[in-house]
Length: 103
Length: 441
Image (cartoon, rainbow over all chains, first blue to last red):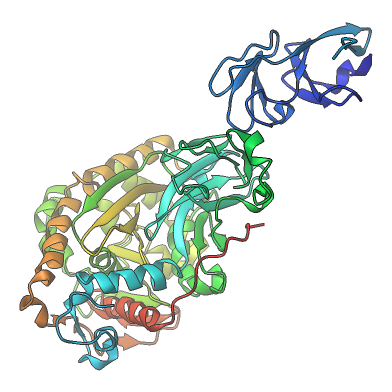
């Protein structure tokens, strides 16, 4: 499904997307490439879209756990469970999020 | 309340007006009960210096310091304003920030992972799902305790735990006229150079503060040897009644000075500092007027009540943090004009370290005196003898330009008496209750 225009998410920025029936999703612009993961940190309840994007690592705003947004892998204490990832493509000027039928 | 003071009752001890003029009961330097009262009625009530704005350059910049024995985090918030919070987790009390200075996204307690943002709000906890079942856990109501009021004067940041304290401009009063000598002699304003030198002295904090408040007398005796080394000659005779020098005080804030322009600065022994001051004489005169322009580097010392001191010329700025009646933790920084050339800033840094650091030629002289002046008060017989503070009892004058209480001659005890008058006034006042927990907006 189309979520927003490419121009709406600058490099190094994160945007939170809410789709009915799915948990909140964070979409990242890593050097011009777009990635998406679950927005909620797997450690506690923080919204990763309120955190910082350092290269391809998102830093949770609460306890500073880091995840690789390209794979969902947890990189540091206190997180150990990986983030669910979603496939993102760009068609023309539009960012397209692919959501699995069974969430 | 007085635990250690012989047979005289507390009211007698604290009512300095009952003492002969110009005498002081030395038990105030060693008594635990007096010390506890000071923490409540001075350090939890007065405006205290906590930072220079240049130490907090961007959102997330923070430092930790003391307000009395309360450890405080001073932080640049996301909106660019400055906040100050008690460095203690509301869960089990552990500190949430272990660093003295740095840049952070927030503060996380090392004990159970309670996390706070730059505004002091609780943003999350470890094992949050277990807390979410608890009806008494209301994160919006939990945060780091803010100071009651925070204010700045020309980039100096002050805070108080007393919600009813007068405003910072009222607290400083006419003393800002004198503060501008250091803070506003250049259009670019001031900054602290990076780094802080910290040390401990086994002395009562007041002995250090009163020294900076007015003790020009000790300069030519205590520091005679060091001054001769740095200047190549003795300290000038500061007590000449014909010389133009003063003790001035406002609300217990004290400045002793003469008008020799560069007497303090010369002790750094660096021609770059002297050249800088000399080349800006006209600018100082334009900004400060002829009289104050001669104070910028002169033989002088200052204490902003209760425990924030500095030396014009040497440019050492410092706070005396109480650590019990007989221990003081000293934090020092070097203040320079922001637009001064780099080599001049470096000269001031080096000069301040050579003179007023723990290994500095002047500071070593002082520490020895202050430690024995403190510990002698432990002697039960020794402390029966009142100390002499009677210099310049009739030296008060009115001056056409200088505000506050003005006394002629900088070799004087007038400022020290004003310091202890203010101290006694506050100790006699009723203590305030616990600090407000309302967030600072």
